[in-house]
Length: 99
Image 1: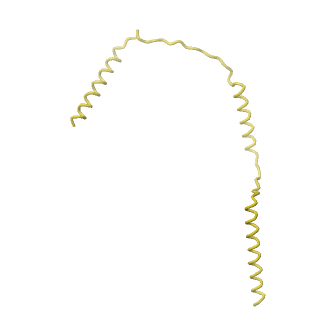
Image 2 (image 1 turned 60 degrees about the horizontal axis):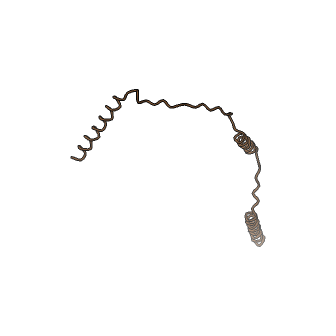
Image 3 (image 1 turned 30 degrees about the vertical axis):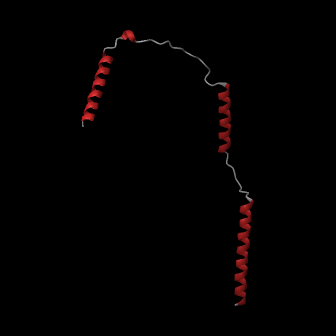
């Protein structure tokens, strides 16, 4: 309890000192810094080149494309499944023929 009271009193004292110092500050202490005005073209040549290449990439991205997955592993699995299905159909027809 004593620590918090002490901390509160010291923070209020610091705040009061800073507030009075800010209030007593005169305009004589104000420093006017010089300002500089720089004029440059809106876009530099390199920036124009980057913007043009981005526009070209965006144009390519908007064009519809058809992607055909050509993965040999998938094709091999699909062929194996087809052969298994055919074998199953042949076994069923053979069993029906025997009945």
